[in-house]
Image 1: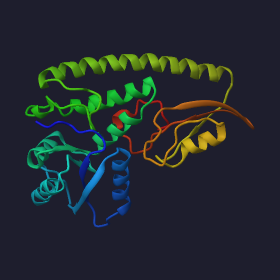
Image 2 (image 1 turned 135 degrees about the vertical axis):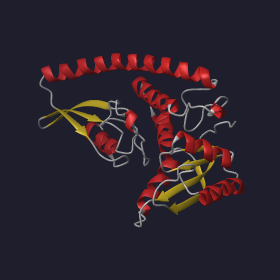
Image 3 (image 1 turned 45 degrees about the horizontal axis):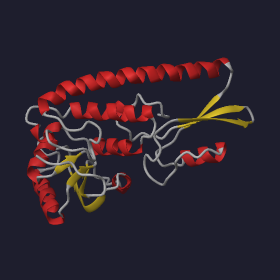
Image 4 (image 1 turned 45 degrees about the vertical axis):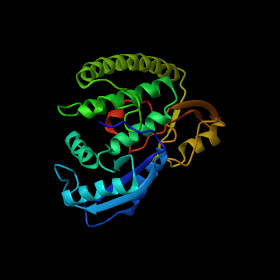
Length: 267
């Protein structure tokens, strides 16, 4: 029913508080995620609830408010700072008449934009396909004609029934390729162990400065930017500092969706 849009378009943001203590840092982090995805926030809608509404996640009145904001701003998408069920996404899209993407879909889109290595791209595609597989339910027919864009850049467009079969086949194919990559990685790991080379990992929250520190220590040129999830791919460099032999840098933090945990980054 809807074409997915590309990064750079406009969105209405939704953040709901589920406690009396309204932590503004959570909202600011969400806005940083949206900015990292290259999306322009037209309006931010907030609210408070004791528990998610089963139909819209938000209450019916708040859902109508979101739909009115979409029409008033001309936004192409609604971004939620929460995980939505497939039914909630579908109900919201029918009401708002535009694409609705939850936090997981937003983060996966950022991953799709930032992954550089072959392994990283495979990891992202696998996570996207698994996320999409949970959305392929009866009545989810508006995915049939969507084009690549934020939220689901990787899979492409197919008809609903064909999607199910293609998704299963592609997931198996990617898993097989990743197993080969993991075997190669394990061989390198065992070689370092035999050579008695100590390994040091830089671990920290996303955008904490791990890649910047890594570049300073190793004189490498790993991409570093003041963005959430700017660096995704693990990097290995050898240095001679006291008794430290090697350093590994990865780009993930605790924000990543659980089904991306297979990645070789520092998790």
